[in-house]
Length: 173
Image (cartoon, rainbow, N blue to C red; front, side, top):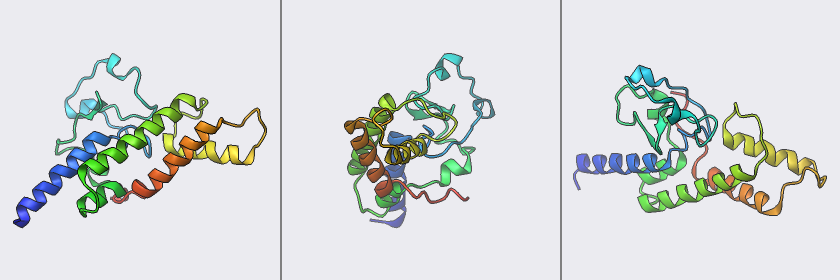
């Protein structure tokens, strides 16, 4: 396969994986504030009333990044690569395998979010989950102990995230 074709196939697969994932946009791992007006977008207030996670980027709407293909997309968004994307680009996993891992992580995060008590909403969700995990490892009183399924979901998502997502490359660019 010619090099140019291979590069364009890799770019297409990486775009498909990123767009099906959106965890960076959801504020799961870090937060990037983007102003829709800077991209010529006026979003109705109702579109932002109930984001899926507290730090969801305002440009993530209907499960998609509204500026993914915009050349003005912030460099942090463009440069950031999770380990899953790196594995896809190195042909260590298929696009479908990557999407399956994303679905599994998002399902676990959604289940955790539903059962986790209200915490500081100004920090990325995955780090709140980590703090919650550490707190409950120290405090064994039954009043503050989460149920078994919640602990199992947290352990599972932490394992998947550390295996396939963290550390991100390109966040320092």
